[in-house]
Amino acid sequence: METATRLNYVPNPYASSLRGRKSKNIGVVIPEVADSFFSLAINGIESVAKEKGYHVLICLTHESFENEQTILKEFQGGRVDGVLLSVSRETSQCDHINDLISNGLPLVFFDRACDEVDTAKIITDDFESGYKATAHLIQENCDQIAFLSISSSLSISNKRLEGYLQALSDYKISVNTKQVVQ
Image 1 (cartoon, rainbow, N blue to C red):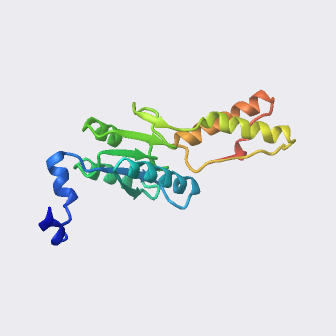
Image 2 (cartoon, rainbow, N blue to C red; image 1 turned 120 degrees about the horizontal axis):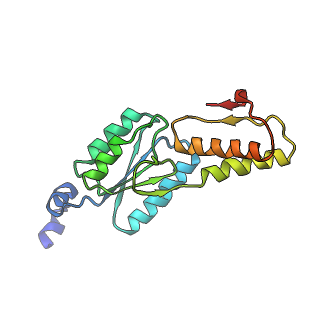
């Protein structure tokens, strides 16, 4: 230990992870960082991970399904001990996610999830959010309520749309398809 201190020895975490089969890294895969939600999420994730002795690797998909596939494939090589994932808006099928889980890597969805993947999900009630927002606008006497979405393949967008449509139905307002913009 004295020699190690004198020589400024720093253990190689990659070599240690090979021996112990633990990288002490958590992968966080998100579509972007410009969104304040993802910035706040990263801060919270990093804070908790650090307390537990883990490092956070942040990877951006830039809303690309292909990038998401590549990142998750790279993680299968032992680079991380687990993954927190918010899928890209292009993600419409989830085989690459099931492959990751099948290879024994724990995965938790947050915000955006693939409904057909059986794993932990930390999500909001998007149906309720869409419903309440629409009902509020109706109660404020708005009569031209549009629904805007970034993707028809994202479950969060589809559930918000369902809430929007249900609120219109409950208030006996007909749907104008020109006001639903994907």
